[in-house]
Image 1 (cartoon, rainbow, N blue to C red):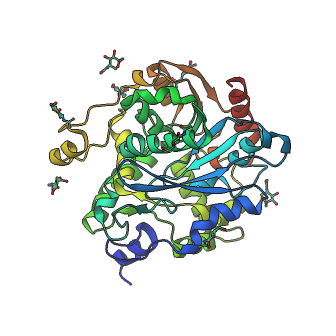
Image 2: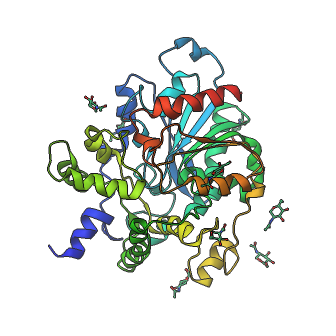
Image 3: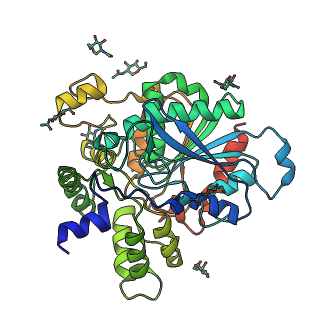
Length: 400
Ligand SMILES: *[C@@H]1O[C@H](CO)[C@@H](O)[C@H](O)[C@H]1NC(C)=O
Ligand SMILES: *[C@@H]1O[C@H](CO)[C@@H](O)[C@H](O)[C@H]1NC(C)=O
Ligand SMILES: *[C@@H]1O[C@H](CO)[C@@H](O)[C@H](O)[C@H]1NC(C)=O
Ligand SMILES: *[C@@H]1O[C@H](CO)[C@@H](O)[C@H](O)[C@H]1NC(C)=O
Ligand SMILES: *[C@@H]1O[C@H](CO)[C@@H](O)[C@H](O)[C@H]1NC(C)=O
Ligand SMILES: *[C@@H]1O[C@H](CO)[C@@H](O)[C@H](O)[C@H]1NC(C)=O
Ligand SMILES: *[C@@H]1O[C@H](CO)[C@@H](O)[C@H](O)[C@H]1NC(C)=O
Ligand SMILES: *[C@@H]1O[C@H](CO)[C@@H](O)[C@H](O)[C@H]1NC(C)=O
């Protein structure tokens, strides 16, 4: 097999026109996890303004304290980060994962799946396997098209006026995009718990990351030139390969660890290598090349702005501007609680300080009380419940 084909099939996914789709059994993975742990589970479909069909997962109530079932539970919406899906936050179970912890604390928990990931690949008119136009979106559309539809749907279903919004990484970023462009959504967010958000990511980038970021752009360009628009879709073959290489007892596990920590930050005791097989079962879940490029652009420009296609016609179609105008964070007037880790090299304290300064209604900036806490620990740290999640619940409870 030549190298290009190898990359295509194992890494970035099929070319447009090759009809593979995700296998059917994948669609029930979140359900199987949640029901497997004995929690109630619901799946909902929302049609966003531009015809994308998005899947929301819901844990309507916890099981540890049954009486809460009767109450009018406040709604908490959790949004995953880059190339993930809801299930990345579900596989470790009720003693570790935030959605179960929130449900048991009395919240009605909803989890959104970004368009283009394994659960949200449908569209009213386009086919994600065959239409390149399907993949023409960045974080901007997630924020201004999908989030409004998701918020409206949930608030309607639950008959509530506002919700707690929790976002990890770019999931939180899109929340800031939403309210800077459509400030009328500010009053639908009771409180935004923002976990390591990429907003102003303007820290000096270490060489190890520069090596990833700059070629990242040309690799995604090359992929699109070859008709590949789906970035790291969930592929059984890719998962099995990484599970084999990275699991405990394999001599090459060190390489996996090195690769992971080069991207997310300081290696520490929060990652249990026994998680590797599950991590690769439920991560990655796919996104668009443009969304990936948008993320890289946030670092390269150090500014919080819509994705610049580098093509005036394309920018014009998207934004009615030949060059996109940066988002105005002073429009984001809902209360925000920022959370960050000192071991995180993707979003540093320096970045958080800039974001805090630009936010008109920041309740606080919370350093996770563990020196080496990195970007991935927000999802998979062994003690993240004690270090972070319990604190999030305390903040939410106070802010009823
Ligand atoms: C997923 O679960 C639902 C509800 O249990 C079931 O109706 C559906 O057939 C399942 N789909 C697959 C592909 O297993
Ligand atoms: C929810 O939407 C339906 C259909 O649009 C509408 O009839 C209903 O009044 C809405 N409910 C609430 C609580 O907004
Ligand atoms: C890692 O996870 C395995 C399997 O759940 C468990 O047996 C082990 O004690 C954990 N190790 C640490 C250091 O937490
Ligand atoms: C990013 O940092 C550089 C150097 O510290 C500074 O000149 C620039 O103005 C910053 N950009 C933003 C958008 O804050
Ligand atoms: C610029 O964008 C337009 C509209 O998306 C497209 O038709 C055109 O081919 C693009 N031009 C270049 C040079 O990529
Ligand atoms: C596009 O921008 C022009 C000039 O800035 C404005 O007149 C026009 O109404 C805008 N069109 C849309 C659809 O927003
Ligand atoms: C951002 O919004 C604020 C509040 O509406 C406004 O005062 C300020 O001029 C805006 N800044 C820019 C650069 O548009
Ligand atoms: C961020 O701000 C805090 C004060 O709020 C300050 O103590 C800290 O040194 C700042 N960190 C950086 C990296 O600028």
